[in-house]
Length: 246
Ligand code: SF4
Image (cartoon, rainbow, N blue to C red; front, side, top):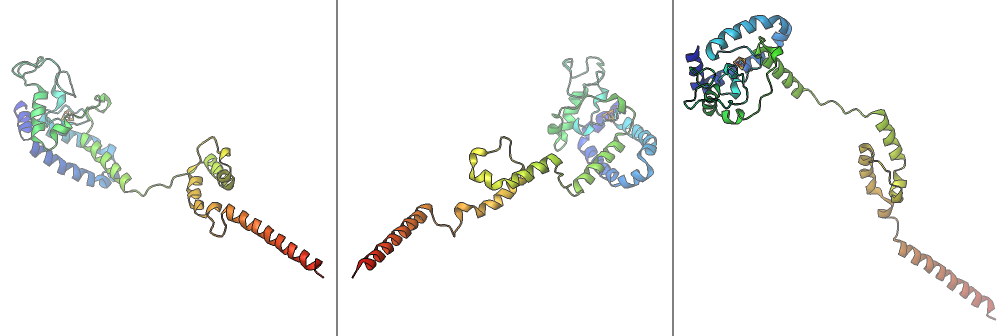
């Protein structure tokens, strides 16, 4: 088994490719698995997984496989079960401090990762603590199920955003007093305006009373007004002259 384990690390790239194809097949079979029942498939698939991965990687069936992030070296073979790098006890010749007959799992992992296309990137990702509740379960089935669900979510149309009743009420009020808010900025609301009201306001701005093409600027209006009054005064004076002429 130890020899097979080291063989897998030396051919990490090949095993990664093989696994990627296998995973795609498992994800494609999700509808069939769902029909048969994942729970029913758990035991037979876990049995096969244990046999294959046990032989190739000395798999301990932790249920959360990270082989593609650890250069195809199973971290559960570390006597301390470290999943994020070696402890400080690696011997000078690279052997494990607990089991000197074995090379440190993390030295193997680093070498395997260096042979994989993005292996050194992935080995740097911090792994969560191992969940012992998943021990003995099939990683293959779990990954297939999760990835299929993820794909379904990505393909589903986006759900319409629901507006909560208080938000709807605020929007209605804000729309009703839109003109007042614009003309009397000192009466600006304390809270942020609801988005629905702001969107409507953006459209309304184009018809602002200050930009109305039919309305003249105030000074012209007042000039005309004065002109009108002057004109009226001239008219009155003319009438008065006319009335006093013999
Ligand atoms: S990480 Fe877990 S599932 Fe993967 S080979 Fe090691 S013990 Fe097995």
